[in-house]
Length: 127
Length: 149
Length: 290
Image (tube, rainbow over all chains, first blue to last red; front, side, top):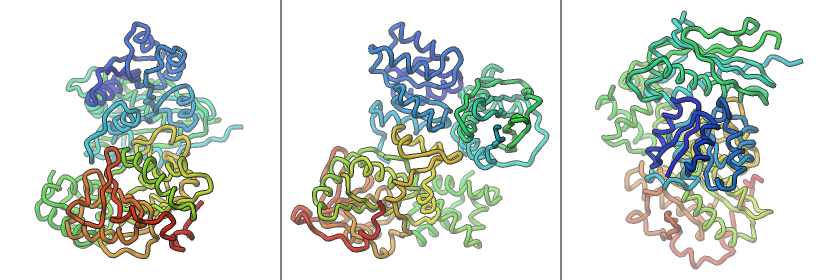
């Protein structure tokens, strides 16, 4: 199971990589939406994309609309992970085809909770 | 005519605290501090433009910027490009959350990072200033708006 | 930095005396984690210095007790209980309350209210038109009850297990926080309640969520709480405990029924209860919020 981490910050990619690796994913990375699309076009199709909004070259919102325009990629789960936190922005991303939305800052548990909601990780050990 | 609107100190303090606790651990809390003459080693800024125009900046001494970088990247040694990346992401998170406190819609810029103080537009005025300290080291988060806004 | 044995003993005695909650040896880290922020706020150098202050300062003691009794909570925590709620409990109660079209729920030890509001979202989505619901959220901490009433949550709390579609449907921004909408707030009422002592007058509940709190009490107190919950639950109602908690060996007044990964508890003899019984108390009707 691959997760494609799309964020222009290496520090943030590193944080997300540690979290999803602990949850059982192998990872691919991209520093912007275009690099991420290049992965998909090259046949590297992940189960999950973690997507920042504000990035150079191609932003995360544009990436989502591109992914949703291609029916071959419809099984990919798209989760925004971004500091964009207005009500309207979340609605816009969901309408464009994002499945989930995590607002920065987040704790590792938040990513695990969301992936559990999406059925991508098994339930954590009972509290 | 646009009216100058500014974020409340409490809201800014809360969101900076959340950014800090989420990524740098909760064992050392971020404490409000008295204004100090900060020896700025690194700074970063993002601008917000649209319904609201403003700039959010973070200023850190070198040692603190490097510690933040070590914690975010989980590395022992930090290169300047690592520090620039980590400090940039810090201001991105704070700036994006400040944007959501203000009237929208507005657009957040990519972060600008500098070794030393980042320049701010001469027509801007500081409307919110958060002096804080973390692990005994001071830091500063500021919000500026255009004077004529 | 570690808490001294004498400080820990003082704190665990205090917690036991005031709330019947147990902080056994081995839980030092938990006491420290919860008291350290208060110690810093009070200007104490460490937790031991803060505990010395607790011995003479009643107001600070109340704050410490608040901190010690807070449970970390997230939206739809563990998910499976909420599936059992929509798939099993709600349809069963709805089928049996056609005469009142009202459903009464208790979220016991509600902490900051994520459980109560998660249930209110499910009710909003699944309750048939024309029905009303009331969720009573109780806690020992007045501070937590005030938070439930405000219905405001930080960004970090919002990220914990709340589906994005529910966030945009039920919340709006309020400064750096998010606030639950009035529709859901109307369904939730708060009341101060200490589970370890006799209950104040309560309505009869169709469904009781009392999760991840019995583990803090010793055996006798656990038994007593379960017995008293039994007195305020409908004979055909449901009780849900935490995933590591059970009524086994505790109280033989409950039957256990599995639904997926969760066990629901029902008063013994529930299968023989006729559909239109019991009549709800006048109080539970009066509290209808919607």
